[in-house]
Image 1 (cartoon, helix red, strand yellow):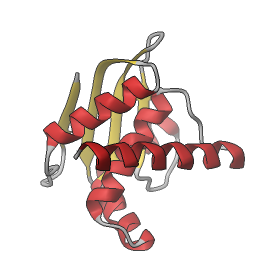
Image 2 (tube, helix red, strand yellow; image 1 turned 180 degrees about the horizontal axis):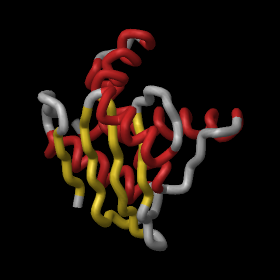
Image 3 (spheres, rainbow, N blue to C red; image 1 turned 90 degrees about the vertical axis):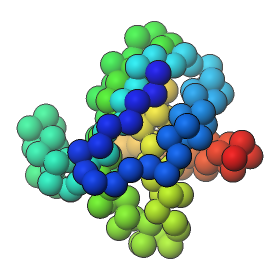
Image 4 (tube, rainbow, N blue to C red; image 1 turned 135 degrees about the vertical axis):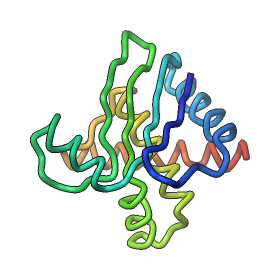
Length: 139
């Protein structure tokens, strides 16, 4: 089950379409959908999580806590709406497009993809682009 929670005053435009797409992405990676929570928040909220749980004192767009069991994806994905909006301006894409990229980035982490090394980052970006195309085909 895909859940959306808001710790800020912004809401996603179409949770049903996003949930359907995320479910399709999970299946495309031969995984099972468990309990996945997206928590949309502001910079301050996510900075506190970054400091408390990861010992990092920096802003970030996403932090994921993976509770996957076998092939069943479970976990919490915290997303800073402010970072997503800034990224959208920087990369000259719509806020909706950048939000989809960040949403699916978290799911890809749960699927086992990493992004620390250059080769991992390259594969992660390829996978993000592939999965973003799935949204456009379905909707």
